[in-house]
Amino acid sequence: MLKIVSAFVAGVIFSIGLTVSGMTDPANVIGFLDVSGDWNPGLMLVLAAAVIVTGLGYRLVWRRSAPLLDTAFHVPTNRIIDGRLLTGAAIFGIGWGLVGLCPGPAFSAMTGGESGVLVFSAAMLGGMLLQRVIRDFLEQQSQRITSA
Image (cartoon, rainbow, N blue to C red; front, top):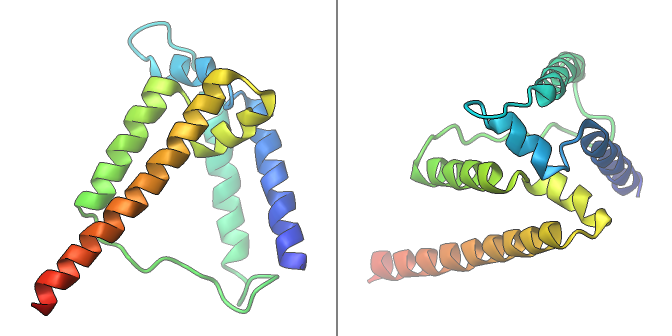
């Protein structure tokens, strides 16, 4: 139960940070990404602060033998840069640049009830589900080919 409560509290703190920093306002994000037009460098401070906090956090966390609420660290072992990773990164970047939102800020911004944010979030969830359906279909087709 403590793991669930701590995850919820961390999520709330993250959401508040996104809101306070302006990351939930698509206009701020698009202004930051528009380096050849009306560039808004304000999010540079947010990014710098995030890098510093993350760097310090990692230095503190990796000194421990295990996390506070688990028996071991769960670190991804896949280090392969493949087509799936590059395609996903490209789609993420294009979507972020076009709309000015990514998943974390979108979910935080949903509390404001703006129709554009709600439409984006619904489309994002639909895209996630579609990706899962396509992946499962392709894996089934691959298994049929290898077992035949």
